[in-house]
Image 1 (cartoon, protein in one colour):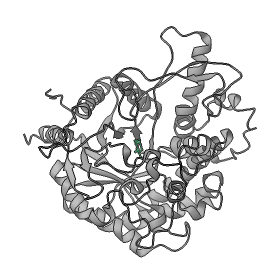
Image 2 (cartoon, helix red, strand yellow):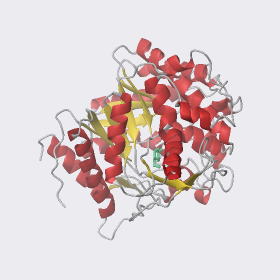
Image 3 (spheres, protein in one colour):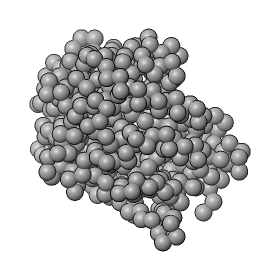
Image 4 (cartoon, helix red, strand yellow):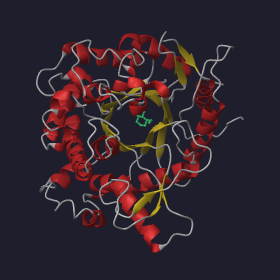
Length: 456
Ligand code: IFM
């Protein structure tokens, strides 16, 4: 199928990764353990007992990987910095070897004409800080501010695009309430506390980034999801949608862009907390103005009304919410493919934030193999890419100011609790030989980029 949809001039085409998912070398270069090293070491947490090694050995193969990005024609590359490489004790001394790695990466990108988009935190909290309470501690805000200063102070002369946090919903609710991610806690209230402290850390870092990098474009990446109820909803179904929407979306949109938590959410969690975790001044710190919003979106979330006295989702405020199975042909993650919901969440994000939006992640996992002809034929990923890019174009036509698209992911990598089983890359990685093979979808993405720039 030919995809010949056009995008506005200046639209950026990129690919994204994250430190723990690709770097490997978890005990090299002075890096200390992160919460993901600890979590993965506990049997049963990660499929096949996979760990952060070898991942893609990107720590050692970075220059070749940048050459591969150039071969794909990428305008931009979104990566994250590993806090435990840069400040192994969480706070205090900066590890020269750790920050030097990112310094070389930035130079390599710029030498190849690729714009760096740097995310400060993509889930690899130093274990030493988790030992001190992690995101359950309000101290996490000054810890993060100090870390942000170390990274921006070193790279801010060359990097303009800064993202504080990646998907705080995952590093709060998924990690502290659902135990699916590190540090693996299962407490309804903890997810909410962690979310608030992550927001506070974000808001603390924003002025620090601006001070150290005049002209910075400062952002946060959320993973909002379109919450869908039944076709003919009852009042109880609508209430379930509202509660789920508050937990997935409102809990971040509202404090960041409206300087308050949704009232109805505070009422729904009143049996868990009196709200005293929100201190005077927190909301003005959290709502510091941003330059753009990063949106990671893959699939919608379906819910309906359940037993009003029960909370099977274990998400704060979601009493009476029952999860509904995804529809249609699912990806290898079991995720629904729904470009219409992608368009809707982009429009909503643009509207709620009033900001330009970058799609900082979108993509799909499939059980790819290298064929006898040496290629990786992944028609499902190409179809997903086409349909979601079409949705992006429609959202732009309907008024959303969308400035770029980053494919998740540049290459197959460590997919968290699923280990190396799930492949999201537009480039295949053989983890034994570390050979990279551009998949058919990667070639198609390169063709779309080249066409956009009039190079085809
Ligand atoms: O691999 C993750 C990434 O780290 C964050 N966003 C979703 C991706 C796919 O699950």
